[in-house]
Length: 109
Image (cartoon, rainbow, N blue to C red; front, side):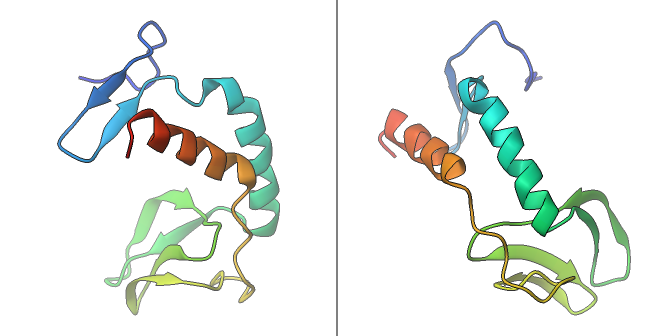
């Protein structure tokens, strides 16, 4: 079983294409990421979504960026507006984009 928090090995692990797991890759910027997550949560608080059949999901989530995944009694979908507020979703902070680009470059994705 993979331990997502194991710190001894910092190498890529390839799964079925195109998924790759970079153990520890975000650690150098972890504090910046956590700070930005807190900023996003102030605009779009974490919430438990409801499935189309009326069940509450056990995980809480929010979204940022142009589109966000959501679920309610009408179905699963991507939306541009934050459902509870009706406002545009908070923008994706630059640190997340930089991290994604660095990971993509690392494996020539």
